[in-house]
Length: 162
Image (cartoon, rainbow, N blue to C red; front, side, top):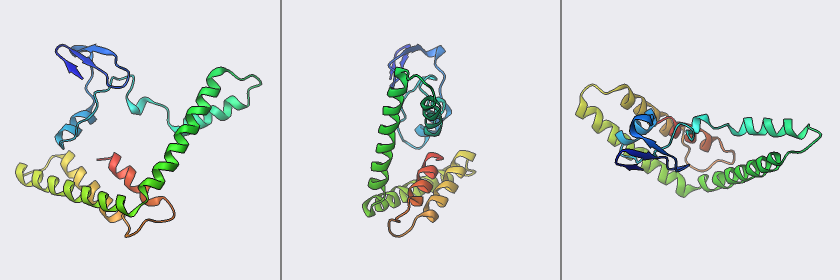
């Protein structure tokens, strides 16, 4: 949220002066393609957060301790919530309706990339890379939901790289 001279992080609600706030390259990319990105401070940036694998490793190390600190129980609860959310998301994403929607999104984004490439003449690296990622995403899809979740993993990674 930008209010005059102050920028407010949409996750932690911390306020920063315009001169103190670093703009992430991903925010700029998202505005290029017409998506609204959250304004996030450097402390809340997703890439600086620990991954689920790192959290699981931390939990397994904490389980070996003879004492249990309160943070262990909070972390265990948080990790269980994340895993449950992932299971539910996989179920929701692995439906025919979701595949139809993903195909529609891919088609619309490819049209937008094609339009941008024609309009600009020589496409930028960002547009070329996005177009290549969309082609990879399109070719990785299958006609019907698979019992394994490879479809979801391939497409989630491809979407994150756009």
